[in-house]
Image 1: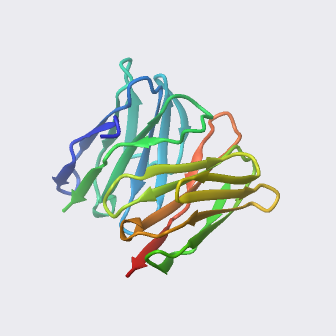
Image 2 (image 1 turned 60 degrees about the vertical axis):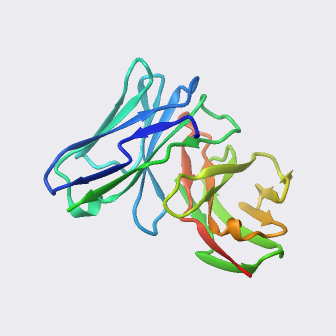
Image 3 (image 1 turned 90 degrees about the horizontal axis):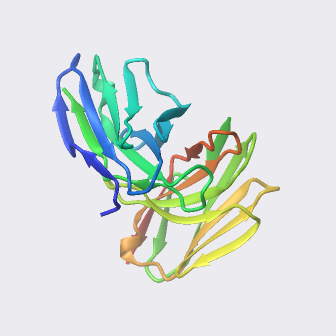
Length: 114
Length: 111
């Protein structure tokens, strides 16, 4: 157990629907990051939060949004889902910015859009 | 922006040594990470380099040359369980300290 909790582990939904992925960072970590990993592709950075504030955006679609709450957990909302959104979605956390300890990743949410 | 290149796949024999290379181009550099990812699982942190030179951690070592935009991960005494993807990731020096991952090198260890 890495200390980063993601729910649900698996999600199957239909095109056009909306889903919410949840992430609880490791205790003491203020930064949360969301990544998308499609089959046989690298980790694509979506968005970063630090202590409740959005800090950086990657290639996140307008149909996707996220937020970090006062208790530091984060949610990633995916709407108007398309088949191509099927992927592993990882959340990671770190204690701050610029540390040398890397990110701690959660076990991911596997989203299948049918 | 950042551009990270790694070989797509490598094969090595159990008990041997393998070196996985990573080259990067970045407008600002503030550290390089290596992660291991088994299929369908979360990446796990292996090593971090911010200064030139070699960092050793048991069977794994990582090297960095900032002037050449080059790093390698060295795995010694390969075991079957080392079969995984190895991801090189670069952190930029901007205010957001964003980390960009390469597409990874899939290592297969054979008997």
